[in-house]
Image (cartoon, rainbow over all chains, first blue to last red; front, side, top):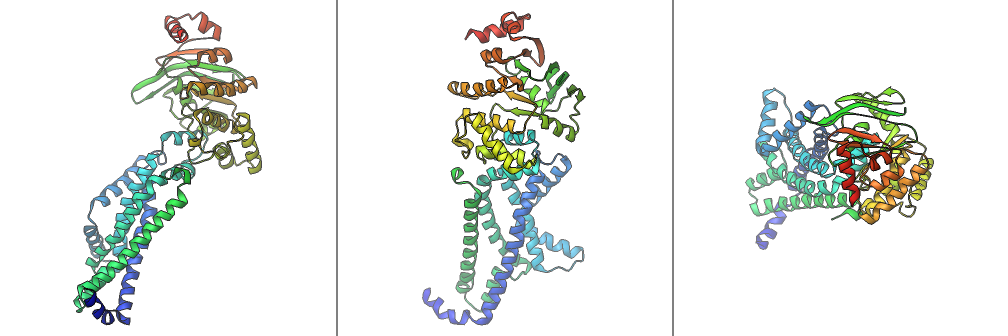
Length: 230
Length: 244
């Protein structure tokens, strides 16, 4: 196998193929940054919107719950198609990459919202009581005491979820976003072996996921005080 | 009349917890609420600070009625009353000093140097001058409760509400917390106390209210309530409690 690979490598790693792969990697990174990155922020937002101690206006909480429950239950591939065809029906001509990033964002946000909710709910209600009677507002309470206590519960599953969503960006190849999986399939169709084409993106996906896992570990070190780490 | 409570009622859902509770607290007075579990003592305190919305009745401070439906009014009340909880409810992610100073700094926006100085002084006053940087889970229950008392005092309340502050403590830790409260009593702090420590209640209270099933059954001086209860229910409770 190694012999086949090394024989094919000089023909595969040409300037144009590398540019092609770099473009694909760039698009994957855009979906990760926009989809997953904003997904974390939006997930926190959704979890906050459905928190009773923060949002007293029930319809707003219901709306957040609806968004989370709907998008969490749709397979990513179906969600991609849904977003894609919705834009088409509306007659809006948007780039496939935008559709991919948006679908990943919707999915990430609803998925991560549950991580955040679990974290917020793991903090004892008496912390809210104590803050409330001292006139500490809901958002100040969230920022100063609830969220810091919730990070140990939020971060490990959030990191796993992020890595999962990075891998899910590969599904955007189905709506012809030029991302890593799409690129590998193209190269394979152009006559390069599946071994080298998919082997290359396998390494790239691994590195990307690994980087995110390290980022998660870093966040844990920064956000969870030493004496409270598991 | 500093704090007056008139026909206060409250309930969680359909079940009434308080039914027409009335009493008053004068400045400098220590009023204690006693009675069996579930009699509504803690709910009175939780109503006063706006954690439980009263369903009927009137609460007035310095003669001005409090509208618990108005957020601004509730915030105003909380500026004047402070509560200490049975489970201390210290912020677990903050040191003792941060627990004491967070509200004065972020809510009151008092000058930082002054707040930190006051925080250290208050913690020293409750005997925790050497635990400023300790987190709640590094402190004993009694120490945590004393931090909670310091935290409540840091807001300079006009009245301190104590909700069974020794009930969650090991017996040998109760004394240190009660001594702290005795110190406050000696300095003339107005307090509304819910407690099962009958000897303590008898010693510090100006007046004692006996509650049962959401009502005040009997009110009087400690001597009246403990030595000569007028109602059968109070007599039964007092004899049971004092027997051990």
